[in-house]
Every structure is written in structure tokens, then in C-alpha cells.
Amino acid sequence: MSENKNNISRRHFLRDGFWAGCLAGLAGLAGFLVTKLKKTNTVWQIDPHTCIACGNCATYCVLEDSAVKCVHAYPVCGYCKICFGFFGPEPVDINEGAENQLCPTGAITRIFIEEPYYEYHIDESLCNGCGKCVKGCNTFGNGSLSLQVRHDRCLNCNECSIAAACPSGAYKRVPANEPYMLKKVGHA
Amino acid sequence: MIRFGYIIIGIALSLILCGVTIGAERFPPPDFIETDHVIPSPTVPGPRQDIYEYIDVVVLLAALGLSSYLVLKRRSRRAIFVLMVFSLLYFGFYREGCVCSVGAIQNIVLSVFDRDYAVPIAVVLFFMLPLVFALFFGRVFCAAVCPLGAIQDLVLLRPISIPNWLEGGLRLFAYVYLAAAVLFAATGSAFVICRYDPFVAFFRLNGNLNILIIGACLLVISVFVGRPYCRFICPYGILLRQLSRLSKWRVTITPDECIQCRLCEDSCPFGAIKKPTTDWPMTEYGKSKKRLAVLLLLLPVLMFLCGWTGSGLKKVTSRMHATVRLADRIYLEDTGEVEDITDASLAFRATGKEPKELYEEASNIRAGFGLGGWFFGGFVGLVIGLKLINVSVWRKRTDYEAGRAGCLACGRCFKYCPKEHERLKKRLLQNENSY
Image 1: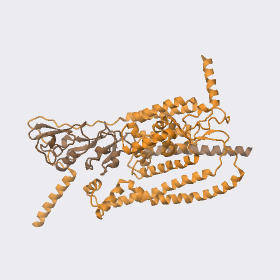
Image 2: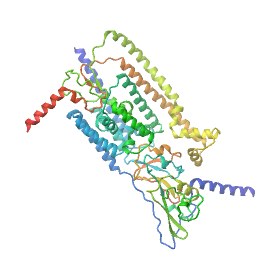
Image 3: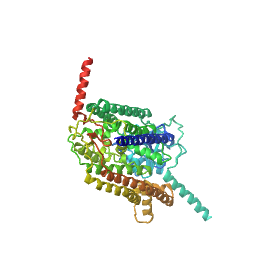
Image 4: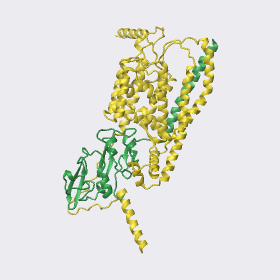
């Protein structure tokens, strides 16, 4: 009988030991993580200098209407009259007619400022993030148009589906208090 | 003179080429002379504020505490169910899934292996809190807090029981899944748990079609088989299982003493109720003892073999890493085995990096997969070995008990116990007397 009792207490002792070990292990892991903890959350963003505007952003987002939109960094823009982000490769005429436009959804509006300068605005409710204009602007212009994750739309998935499909590795986790990587003057 | 001309042309050409790839400022920004036009700056709508992350953590903590109370003290299936529906609505449909405790495993692993990756505090808490609660109160997280469990629990209408051997065999998949998730997260390749999360698409009412189909199939299975994801797939469930084996307090079917009435025997849709066992039959004893000795000796061999296989699979597994895929592609293109080019190789060529550098990087990653494969396979071998050993060990049990590891603390079995009815009656009387 006494042996049996001993047996049970040994088992209890072992279990308690394991229990304490697990707790200590969790505490140790927590302690390790605290050393490299980040107080702010991270969000996904596209590095415009790595992005090749392949078009995956328009289709791979888990949202039906992609969280990636074209963003215009106005200070970098040359305000060109003939903008290769706005006009298709062979425009019929140099005006705002739909047949001349590169954007498949007509999300870019062109506003006359003064001769010969025009300002280009993106209508985000129409933009689907395909990046056609970004490619045009990067190839022939200043590269002021770039694709950016818009954080009012983004769900901040733990693994971003677009990042997994991004061919150039342009997706980065950035701190949530600096959530954009916009192009700046003299940095392009 | 001719050489000088060549240099000029060369510089001009390279400038143009650079321009094509980078998109330099070819046209200076205008000074508006006629009009006083002010150059606008782009809007930057911010992400969800950090404070909401902390609110999520507080809600998680509160839900875990309440779940523990309801499961262990209140013993009310109805209350557990209500909390479960709340968790489904809050963590599932309102928060739309991310970040969840299940996926947080990968963030933790990545932060251990990647020096540059710092894990946000909310993610650490989402990972830690359910584990700590499991150490104290069992799997109360699974019972009523996890939205993935809740969505399956809701549709469980016609539960069928699964034989023990099949349950154990299928659960092996969860161990492999956990090991694979850790391997891919540690090498920085992918977060597979998130990529193949079957229910997050339902929470968002949006998502990848293939995953949506898998999720729908799992939900249909859930009507008949209780919580298939939790039992056979969930990698976090594995961690909770092992910790809840050691838990200080846990679900008991009866609030009192088991009277062996057998009424609860078939009440658990997850097959987590352990029946009383007889003494070890003497004819079996000798045979099992020998088998146990052989299995114990075989365990290291099994681990080695599985580890060797896991390491040998590095060519396949490392293809999960984008850099390795890219290096393979570039190699094929450079040796002329393929003629077309992909977006990825186009992007790589635009960076002007040497293929050699890329190959070296890829072979480093592959070596990492080789080493990781040893651990991956060794772990799987250990699990298989321990499962076999478990078959040869006889545990004596006198009462009907909720299994330490398998019990999801859903509280379905409570009402089957006659002692529970006695307790409820007593409590009712007490309440009446106090009025």
C-alpha cells in the first residue's frame, strides 16, 4: 500500500515538474521575445523602387477590390502635357477622350493648370491597382505614379497574398506609424 | 578620338538604360508663374490604430477568463455556447481573422530565426495567453474563444464517432502540419497556416476560390464529424493538447464522484471520453513488454530515418522559398533550357545583380532547409514512435474521464451525468431558500 502511495506521489511530482518546466519555458520564450519586441504593429507596404508593376496587385488581393491603389506623388511629377501614364501607346488625339486613355477603368483625371502643365489625379474608387500607368510613368516619365497599399482598405493579413505572389519582392513589413513608402523629390 | 566617342555613347546608353529601369526625374517639376497653383501632397489614410490591437488582447483575455469560469465553475453548456457565438462574431466576422493564435505560431518562430523581424506585442500575447490558460485550465481556448473552432462547432448536427485508431492516425497530419509550418516560417519562406486557413475566407466573405472550396468541404464534414480542423489539422491544437495534459484544473464529466452509469459514454462528439479499463490481461502482458522494449530501441532509428528523409527532401521543400525558385528559374534561362522569361526573372535582371550571388544565396537557403529537414523529420519520427509506444502502454482507469489532451471543454457531456442533475437541483433549492 505504501509503495502504491509512493508511486502516485512520484507521478504527481513528475507532473508538477513538467508543469513548472512548461511554464518556465513559456516565460523564457516571452522573455526572449521581449528583448526584440516592437511596440507598434507592422503593416504591408510596397517599395516603389523595387516594384515592377507586373499587375499581380490587381488580382491577388483577398479583397475583391484590391487594397492596392495607384498613388500620385505630386511633388515628383513633371506635370507633362503628354503623360505616358495617362495616354495609351498610340492615342488617337491628345485629349481626355476615353479612347486615348491608358487606364482600363478611367481612374485618372487630367486637369489643366497653366500652359503647358497638367495635373493628374487618381480616383481610388475606380483604380484597381493594375499598375499600367505606373509602368508608363516609370518608363518614360518621372515615376511619380506608384502602387501603394492603402491602409483604409487593407486587412493586414498575417501573410499577404499579394506579397506571396510578388515577383520582385517589393512587399515589406513596415511599422504602422510610417505606413507609406512614397517617392520623394531627388530620391527617384 | 573614336574611343572617346564610344565612351560618350556608352555613358549615354547606360544612362538611358538606367532611366528605363528606375524612372528618374526626367522632367523638372514646374514653377507655376501664371497661376499660384500649389502642388498638393498625396493622401495617406492610416491603418487600424494600435489601440484596437490592445482592445483585441483585452477581449481575448476576458473571453479566456470567462470561458474558464463557465467550463470549470458554472458548468453550463448553454453559457459556453453563447460565449462561443460571441467569439465567432468578434474574432471571426468583426476582426476578420488576423492575427489569430493559430497563425501567431509562425510570427513567433520567424522572430526567433530572423534577426530583423520584430514581432508586435499583440501577436506575442495572442500566442501566449491561450497556452498559459491551457496550463491552468485545459483547452478553454478551443471551447469558446477560437473562431475557427466555433464555426465548426455551430454546424455540428449529426455527430458520428470515429474509431480510436483512425482518430490517432489522422491526428498525425496535424503534427506534420505543425512541423512544416515551423520549417517554412523559420526559413522565411511562407506562412503556410495562413495561406491554407480554410475559414478566414468565410469571415471576410471574400477570398481565394480554392481555399473557399476547401473551407466549404470542411464545413460539410463538420456537420457529421465534430470539429475536423481542430482534431486533425490545427497545429496550435497540438501545443494546447500537450500543455493541457499537465493542466492544474480541467473539465470533469461529473461534478461529484463517477457512479459508472455509462450514460455519458457516447456523449462526446470528439471522442475525448476515456472509458474505464480493466487490469492488464496476463497473456498480453509479456507480449506487450517485449514490444515496448523493441519500440523503445526503434525510436532513435525511426527518428534518424525520418530526419534523413526530411533532409533529403530539401530540393522539394526549398522550392517554397521565393529566392530558390528565382535562382532555379534564372539558371534555366541562362542555360537556355527555357526561352520565355517570367516577371520574377525580369525584375531580377533589372536590379543588375549577378546570378552568381543569387545562386549562392539560394544554396545557403537550401542548406538551411537541409538542416531544418533533419529537425522536421526527426520530430515527425518522434511523434510516430511515441504513438506506437503509447499502444504498448496500459493505463489503468477506474472512472469515465474527459481525456486530458483531447477534451475541447465544450461542456456537452455535463448534462448526461445524473450527478450533475443532482447538483443543479440542489443549487435550485438553495436559490429558492435564499429568496
